[in-house]
Amino acid sequence: MLLLLSVVALSALGWAANPDPSQVHLSYHGKPDEMVVTWVTFEEIDKESYVFYGTDPKKLSHKVTPYDIHSFKVIGNDEIERWVYRTRLTGLTEKTRYYYRAGNEYKMSNMYNFKSLAEDMTNFTVCIYGDLGLENGVSTEAIIDAAQDGQFDLIIHIGDLAYDLHSEKGKIGDQFFDKIVPISAFVPYMTVAGNHEHKHDFEHYKRRLTMPHNGVGIHDNQFYSFDLGDVHFVGLSSEYYGYDWTEHIKEQYEWLKKDLSLTTKPWIIAYMHRPFYCSNRNGKKSDCHGEDNEYIRVGSEDVPGLEKLFNEKGVDICFWGHKHFYERLFPVYDNRSFYQSLNVYYNTQTPTYIVNGCAGNREDHALFDATATPYSAVRSEEYGYTVMKIHNATHIHLQQIAAQKGTFVDNLWITKAPGYRPGVKNVPIPSRVIDKEALRKINEEND
Image 1 (cartoon, helix red, strand yellow):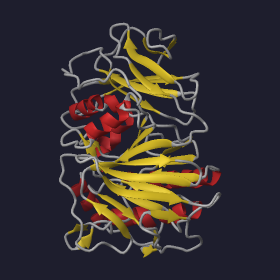
Image 2 (spheres, one colour):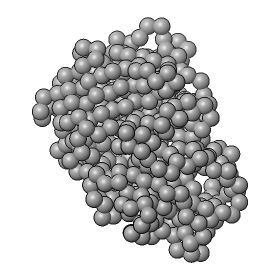
Image 3 (cartoon, one colour):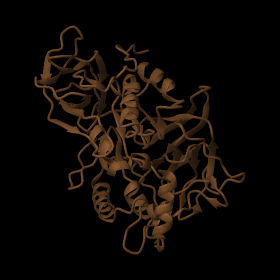
């Protein structure tokens, strides 16, 4: 077992002027010799800020200053100004443990550490979940324990952070990021936005997080990609569709089409907040056949959807949150199922879709319909998180863990022949007219 140091307890913030570094978290931008450190203070620092880091905790031999320092305060909502610091650690040796402290001449953070990643990563493990809040964050302690035990190389949070980042003048977001420091200061913490980040045009999400730059005009932490080992990871915004940001949808789509065409990695794994498919119910109607889900999946007459592109470009797996349950689907395309054996998929005809919005938050569980949809393979209302191990270019193992029991809810191997790309090709999906008023009402209910 790997023993990690310096677990940080939730700080007792006063939200007054305060130079103490807080909310420290890592992110990975696809370069094994780099790691990005982000943190927050509640006071503008008139002295130099920096990160000390090195391989010896008793002698942090490297010092680097932030490449970006900015403050933000949401007009009409926050009375609290926050300063955010973004720093890039460079010159890292692959698969090496580094120790670091972030701060300024007034106050430094506790000592944290992480293990650097590698270009040729094999047998690495990713923890994936959505919809984790401060209140009723049932999975948090289990994920902390596993992260501190060195079980994860990467974390992916599929939207809806804290519930909500902006709530109580942003204090809920502050408390959430302090609470997850034993995860996020030790393991790269990758995110996409969900509907609960939408308030004030995603301002708290854009300002607090530091995701990879996508190389286009829109850089708001909502869509990006990076490579690790045999995997090309792609984070996407379903919220552009949910809130009908047409120009953002089009720019993301064109970027995605190019990005997926360029990758040569054996696996393509995407993640975004809202799903195409699920089998829970909302009254008499399937909760994943709403205007927002259909808009994301098939688009409209003038806006492209994502399902056809996923199939054309060979996406292997896509993770979703938003619905507060776990559901793994059989391969499906345009509501047509392509059955495989329950626990081993081989050369899937379509991407494998998994809904995991059950990490725990102040809202209730979603309930399943008594009868599953034909493409539903495994369903669970247990709070939990997914552990995905990428063994090599042909084998991925997924397990869904019930956080309160520590038991396995689902167990799946996704396997394929070398060089195989899934996807139903050259089969059009008819566009549809999206009811914008119905879309608006869905968002009012979700927010």
